[in-house]
Length: 326
Image (cartoon, rainbow, N blue to C red; front, side, top):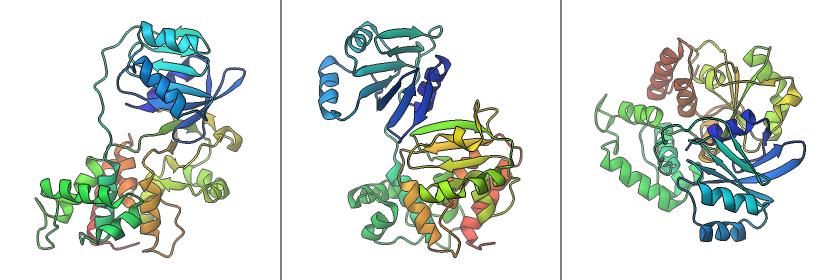
């Protein structure tokens, strides 16, 4: 389920949403409410809601992001000030006891399984070593995931005939090229919260203006500018930022925009391995560790509408195979 689509409904209803972390947001409706996101692929039972309220006792409000609402969830959330809900298919918001319906029902969205971020972090670490597999302990250290998750990832990659990588195999099963293609094209996205912004400055100038806030927050630059660091090709038109926590971008002279109009994409990813693999790749270079790794940069370009994005992805793939830095 795409969290950002739910939060877009809040914006359509006139609420201002400020991300704090990948799980916490501030909702401004004239008053300030700090809400913790509870993402569910089916409507929870009352006993499960009661358990969530106890487990998340430190949260002011639990905001359930659901495929749709029904009478039960609307009644429960209306009667408890610590509960709120958003139904995507029926475009319904329940907040502070009020029910807001924005439009007609839509066809139900297909359920999304848990995203295998540990597997893709493992893949990126193996690609960093040009197909050579390190010990499970080392992979876990470099990616920030558990050894058990690494073990499971390696088994799944062997089942897909992606491992072990055969250095003599140029393409097809067990080739480095196949592993790189898989890492980019099958990556399910970072999850979390994505917001869209528009600035009048060039993307590189905006990044330069934000250099202090990027550094202080241990944030990363991805997309066009990161691709330009590893394999120059893409004309820089859009700035992609990855922050571990939310910031109010309006303080930096930019305005909220639709995904189609935006030239700045701000992601607060649930996939925390992005920050770990960026540091691992930075160790191989003399430049500051402020860019996403090249695999994540390539994935970001696959989300770009620009006509040169596909060519830039191909250039990054060639870089990952050769590992020749500009």
